[in-house]
Image 1 (cartoon, rainbow, N blue to C red):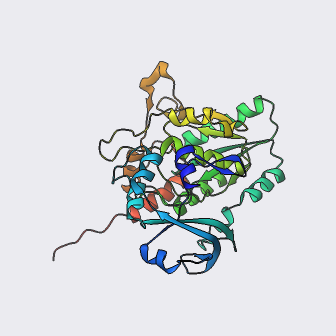
Image 2 (tube, one colour; image 1 turned 45 degrees about the vertical axis):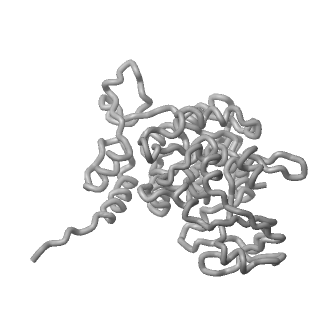
Image 3 (spheres, one colour; image 1 turned 90 degrees about the vertical axis):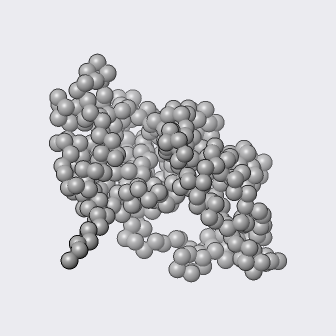
Amino acid sequence: EYLQCLHYEHVVVNGEFIPLPVPITKTITKAEKESIADASKVALTSPAGDIVATLEQPEVFEHLKEERAGRTFGITHPDHPYIKMINEGGDWLIGGKVTALADFKYDDGMDQFRLKPSELQAKFKELGADAVFVFQLRNPVHNGHALLMQDTAEKLKAKGYKKPVLWLSPLGGWTKDDDVPLKTRMDQHHALIKNGVFGETPVVLAIFPSPMLYAGPREVQWHAYARLNGGATHYIVGRDPAGMKHPGTNEDIYHMWHGAKMLELTPGLKKMQLLPFTFAAYDTKAGKMAFFDPKRKEDFVSISGSKMRKLAREGQTPPEGFMDPEGWSILVKYYQSLEKPKNIDL
């Protein structure tokens, strides 16, 4: 199945191709490999040491790290943050039939937002949703994102949907060091929902517990498939989803539209309708975020992530209308907490 995933981007189950664009693996060390020799079943434990699952008929095989990186990411550069973790991982992989024994709990005050696919589907049914549009994100939400969500809801209603529901789906697993941590993002999302930033559209905030791979077109398929299984009917996809700069050249690793194109071409996603990500920037004439108008491009200013971080670290206020004030104050508090006090020589 591991080879099927790497080469087919699917696994074959009972003769049927099941999409799996990126491998889900468990690495082990040589010592761990030797400790479970001839075992018919092994325990999988949480970071606290509690047994949460069993793995039957374990199969151990060599972790060919360069092959895994090359086929998953299209590059093997050791400074790519996820490839770095692959290289630092165990030299062996273990697979087998996994049986979950308990719901996994993080005990971080956010477990109630980690909903199973069946729980999400029940939630959407309870709300009476006839369309569920999902927005996958790993960054704080600004008013340009909110404008896109409001516009999407209106377009769905114009197509005849009576009760579109927004599934705000922040990625909740590992992210690289310069990304905003999950707790801060969730606090910011809660503030925006409370303050009505998304308009009258019902919002379901639910964490997607996957780590971020930064694997571009392959990873965005994983993101979309997972949301389809959770009950999404529409998926918003933008430029260079799940991409990043090449650690060696500082150029984009992936073409900006290849992720969206792969979603269009993927047979397993025909049940999900793709929605374009319309670019929004700060309209200096209107004093708010608006969809970019090339006819008056001189009126628009793009506030990049690096500029946003700089403003937050310095405790400055962005242009009025860029972000909900309470949401911005949460980011300022986080970024200023990172500033280390300078030593003073006496």
